[in-house]
Length: 153
Ligand code: ADP
Image: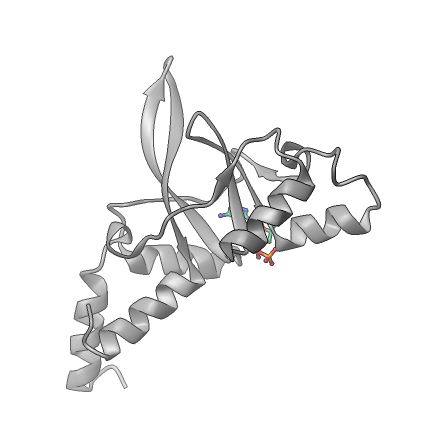
């Protein structure tokens, strides 16, 4: 399989692609946003994951399963803020724009998540902060596969 010329060419092309080449626009909300309003955003923006930010800095991630868990739990989703149900820092798997798209794909597979925030690392008050600048998802990687095979990239 890997000895075929076409496959070698494909591998080389994939290895040249950076996260910043294929990232998409992230959908973000603040920690105070109600679970109800965040679910509305999920539908309006047609995404499965929303990033939670404060002044553009990454605080957490909230996905379909988190919303379902919250709804099944019977709490009032109009009152509960997303900050209560999100997966929070430092347990967030991220990538930077300079990393290879292949590394992002490996992180998604290894950690069994649908998407990763693309971040820019900044130092604020001596503390490392992560500014959200994009998103990489299984869809971005599927698009990359199709674009490469169809010669679009
Ligand atoms: P879904 O909920 O649609 O199955 P995921 O598989 O991505 O989506 O999410 C499963 C769990 O992992 C959720 O609790 C979510 O908050 C968390 N999660 C999603 N993306 C990340 C990430 N990049 N880093 C850490 N945790 C994440």
